[in-house]
Image (cartoon, rainbow, N blue to C red; front, top):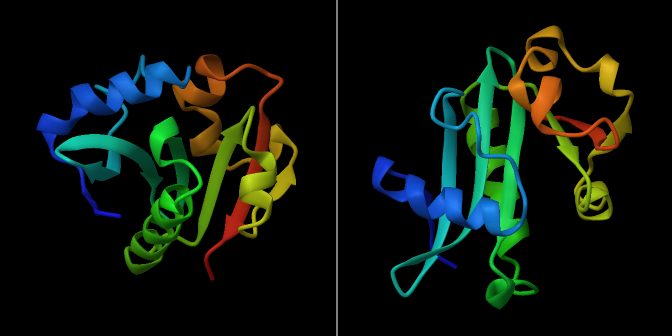
Length: 143
């Protein structure tokens, strides 16, 4: 695993990876999402983003290329993102998922009602229009 902070040069590769797995990208140019990427042989094979709102943040778009699944890449990306968020004063992570509820539940995330998310998160494009109402909302305290 070779996880690092994404650069602006990584954004096209991140978007392509997210689109491959049908994750939202429409707001990424304006949403101020900080990404971590996993890289193999010069290619972005995993990505995870953090959209911060003071002490709460939205975990965005965890995606791992099929060739790297089962190797711990997704778990590694989540652990590093949580550690960096905690170091930077984030107390709580919120996410929406249609496919990874069990993955996140194993890592301490719990389901909450979508409308129970903090107001700043509810105002994001991801919550308002990009993710369907059927997406499961989850939360994890970093305290």
